Length: 331
Picture 1 (tube, helix red, strand yellow):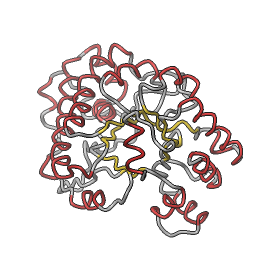
Picture 2 (cartoon, helix red, strand yellow):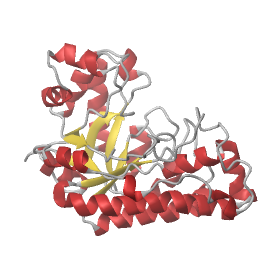
Picture 3 (tube, helix red, strand yellow):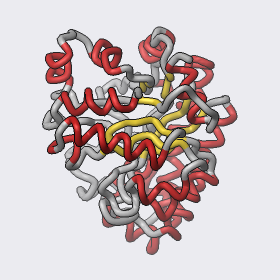
């Protein structure tokens, strides 16, 4: 069983030869540390040394004529910074924004990478962080208040953001075909303690488009992997019902998100993550890490892909701990 078949099988909920492993997507400052530790020159060589089963290759080919990124907001530094719609009161006021255009997309390099990835599981598709995009376009507090004060405005902005991602996915999926195994997309719905918005607002403003994206992926024959940091235990049932087959990253120190907390839903969804990056991987010994991997495997396996509890592993994580995590995952 190669890595591609292994992860497909695990996400499908069927027996595999072992649990899976994903290093995540380390911070750019972390890669030199890992390369030095393993004595290699490329990121791919690090993954091969660890036995990594998954490759995340999402489309980055957006080329605005003025170099702007998607949903560009000049001067934006944080989700709380006021966005261009902070003072909007009518839907018509959102029309003047420089909305992304499909004609600025070119997936050539992304498709080439996907098709040459080798015998590994290919997670891809537009990242589609629509929750945060809408949050940025209003400003975090104004977004939350408008869920109560101007829901029609929130729906209108959400529709514009999500329709772009949906249409971009259609273009990308049509070109990529079976080079993709799973649609991997992400929105951080939780804080360390709870959801950012209440479950009622989650159902009203998040779930309709969320279901649309999962249905789109399934229509193309792809498995669905959701990334959401934070304490999202209150809505995991909703996410499963909407068609999510794999949940990432299981922020171990967030309320209700430890392996012990998640064990009751074992068997209903594949877990990816769960190895704590807030304390254990930073401050623990390799033996501590190995012990925790064994614990998480016992609680959440066999439908488990061992991975850090946040994919952007920072350089303060000793590479020996990453190696210990991988070695124990592959046992």
